[in-house]
Length: 294
Image (tube, rainbow, N blue to C red; front, side, top):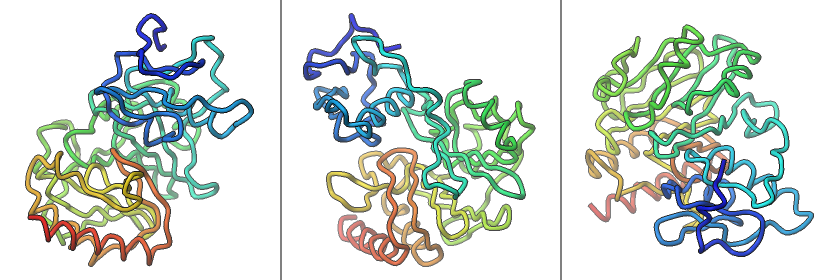
């Protein structure tokens, strides 16, 4: 629970607040940018949800449940409105934001996908029965797909609970030595691991980064590609490119040549939904911008 005695003084007056244990992962700002903003190396409440604005209030609750340090809460300790996660990103598509971000992954989002051939967990949240139980109700987990070494969190515990196979690229294997399956190859060498589930190596953020494209509709991009609220466009994180910006530029170019999708669901950064043609055009434009600033 958020701690009132650690309430950040930069919060605006009102019931909602962030405490000073915040690690500035930005998760709350991506989920509810109308409520949360950065301030002095932390996130704070910059606008209280208006009375009667159910959407804004729900956004604040979703951010609170996702917060990896439990730093978001209300002064009046109002009760959480029932189960919030897993939360389907589009009704009827079987793709869920799972919340419960892990501090060890710096608040990265993870995702759950229901599939006839076996469900997927893409990257890992922190371990909690509050997710394991609904995963079980939805049919368990057949594959844990790790997009890169930074966001493995408690993948081993979910895999053990459900007897799941764990996939990671060979170049990031040391982060998940328990992995049962390795993705091999570089940019432009996709691997199909199940019908409609394609893993694309995208070295750049880390040497073993991958993105996962499901049914040519959903792209789970780890930390390689995201939407920027401030730019209102696709972005890549040059300041958090641990392996090679040049390699990441080439990787995203190869991705644009081989993959189409309409949903972008990253680990860090904002998610977005656009027509596939527009998404493709924006990805090509991003690669051009990246290549212009080597």
